[in-house]
Image (cartoon, rainbow over all chains, first blue to last red; front, side, top):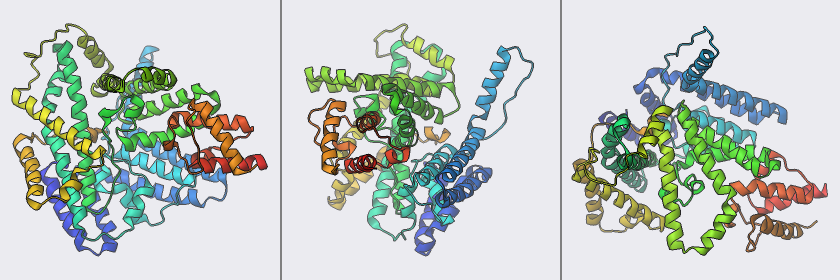
Length: 480
Length: 81
C-alpha cells in the first residue's frame, strides 16, 4: 500500500475520520490499530517481527533505566543491541553472509555448499531497528527516561506515516507528542495537506517521469556510453532526491494532519559545498543518528589517536551508513567513498580555507557545489547498481566514446518530458530558496486571499493530474 | 580554580586548536556558534583539554556536554578533586 495508491487513500480517509471521532485519550490506540492494518496489508507476518521487537525493547528500556550498577546497565544495553542487530542481520543480511561465506569456501576448494534462504525483508525493519537501538542507548547514557506506557511506546515504533521509510525519529522527540490529546486543528490539517500535495508533485511529476529513462539506461548499461550515461546518472540523482524528499514530505504531511511533527530529512542538499556539508543536509534523520550513536562514541574512544582516530571513526560510521541501505558490497563501497571524501576534507580543511580566501566567493562557492554534486553523482553509481561488475561497466562506459552531442542520445525523453522536468526542478529550487530565506511559501500563502491560495493549490493538483506519471511505482527507499 | 579562569584558558586553547583567532567563548557558547567547531574537530578539542589539564573525561561526560559551561564545570570538578 504505497502512499500514492487508491488503497492508501481509502485507508487514510477512514483512519483520519476515526482519529478525530474517538476520545482523544485513546487516539494512540487507534494509531496502533491502523498502523497494524497498514503493515499487515503488505504481509501479515511482518507483524510477527515488529511486535516482539516492540515488547523486547519496551522491557530492555525499563531494565536499563532500573539497573542499580553501571556495569549492569551496560550489559543489558549490549544484550539488547545484540538481539536487535541479530534480528536485522537475520532478515536483511543473512543471504549476503551465506553468499560470501560460500564464495570463500569455494576459493579454498571446500565441498560444502550453502544455499540462500528464502526470507522476505520485513518492511521498515532497518528504520525501526535503528530507532530502538538509539532509544536504549539514550537511556543507557541517562539522557532519557524509559517509556513505561506500552501503548505509547508501541505508537512510537508503529506510527504508520513513518513506519516503512522513516524519518528515523528520536524517542525524546516523538514520545511527548503521543501523550498530547490532539484536537481537530485546521491549521495543522491545512499544513499537512499542503505538504502531501508538495510531496506528490515531487514524486509523480518529477521522480516518476525520470524513472523510465534511468531504468532504461541502467538496465542496458552496455548500450550506453559517455555523455548519455553521465546524463543518466545526473538524472538519477535528481530522481532519488525528488522521490525520497517527496516521500518524506508526504510522511511529514500525513503526520501533521494527525497532529504530529516529524523530523525533516532534507535541507537543500545540492547547496552543499562539500561532502561533509552534504551529509548535514541529506537524509538528516539517518546521518544525525550515525553521528550521535556511532561516530561520537567511536571517535571519543579513539581521541588519543589524534587525526587517525577521527578518520578511523569516519570509516566505521560511513561503512555502517552505506551498509544500512542493503546487503551488497556496492553499498559498502558507497559508504567508503563518502568516508574518503569527508576524511580528505577534514585533512585539508586549513589549506582549503587558505585557498578560498584568495578566490572570489562568486567563483569558489559554485565551483565547490559543482565538485560536490559531481562526486556525489559518481558515488551514486554504486548506490544504483546491484553488482560491482555492472557499476564498473557503467564507469568504464561513461569515460569511453565521449561525444558532446545532446540530441539523438536515445534517453527516451521527448521535448515535453524535458520541459516538465526542468520546470519542476525550477519550481522546487524556487520554493526551497524561499524557505531558506525564512519566507516559507506556506506561511506566505496563509496571508493571501482565498482565490490566490486556491489558484496555487489547483496549479499543483492540475500539474500532478496532467503531468504526473501514474504507473503507481514504489518509493525508492521502501526497499531499505 | 574559578570557572572564569578556566573559560579564558579554554578560549586560548580553542583559538590554537581551531587556528581561529576570532574565537570568543562565553559560558553559553555551543559548537554551532563557533566557526570550525564541528563534530570532526570536537574530539580534538576534548583531547587537547585533557592534555592541558592532565585529566581524563569519561565517554558519558563527553556525550553530555551541551555548552562551554558544561566543559568548564567538568574541568573544574576534575582538577579540584
